[in-house]
Length: 464
Image 1 (cartoon, one colour):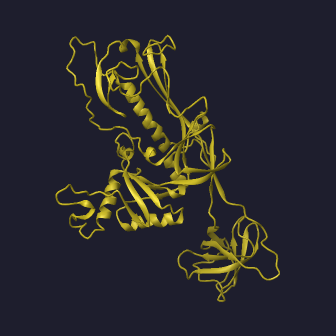
Image 2 (cartoon, helix red, strand yellow):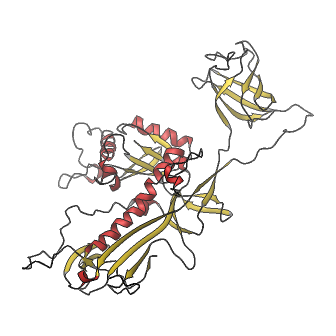
Image 3 (tube, helix red, strand yellow):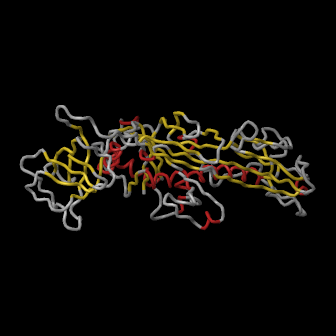
């Protein structure tokens, strides 16, 4: 809840009452003649706010630390990719050695080796010994090593293979497994950033009252001059969301620092950075089922979340609509009345809100990607949308020290019993009800300290 001091009303008044926070400053009262003015403001750009994404898919939770940490479960099963087969292996050999450093593969486990091109180009065997750099395997195939494209070489540059464990086998009267495995957890963290803004008006300019009717968050209301204060707040609320989407850390995971980091700025991990570094990226148009199937196949490899929400720009939204319409027998040649409540005597609905293809996908236009002053002004190489899993997941909160159920996407803001930094607003100066200094003006300050937590980023898609 916002912390407000100085009797500031941050929404338009439903009646014409001179409240300190309801202002516009768009009129010049120094003219000889008062101009004719329309009482109602004309909204030529419609609703200019771009903040809607996090309100739909996220939640806001308090935190008390400068660092937010959580751990996510790793894969249950072990797989190694791009493994090199040690040189000196012939196609008729019944054993081979894999070059893997500090592997979690153990003696007695049974593994499958494949070059990823065909089920016939694969082998199964049992691990006979493990060292710090090598895994020795005895094959079960009587014909020896399968016809891999190339098996090693003097420089260990042979065809790389994939290896995964599918079980184990021990002879009678032998000891058990030589070593145990710890659960594989990935620990992530993020830090909140402080976001500020300010509006200022001279006390002398507050001496004459004029009224204008505007559309506010709570419906139609009246503002008395200082309209810019109202717009400053709206703009600040947008920045609270766009900062969580676009933020990048000043220091990357490899420890490389930036000039901003050298100056003392930490940055933060926003949604787009989290997906690019830990999630999935789909490039190209989603204009046929084959492209959707690629997305589904990748989701199968990840968490397989049943319901997903697609937030896309207008162009991608139309691509998906056209692709879905083409699945109808009449979609390519004309409209099919009677389907989707499209009767002849009503307006034809050519859009789709969602579809099911392996998983449920719900589609929504993301205004941020269409706004010409934000991402909508970037042509070529921009972001076309994101696919976000719906619901919540269970993670281990490193600070709380226990498991917690959290939405996949949520905002953490700094708060305590005495200080709530979710959305602060206060007034300083000597005008507009404030009496904190000798400044002949009223300053309205805004502040928030927050960070975005993207849990299970491997289930997210970035559309480019």
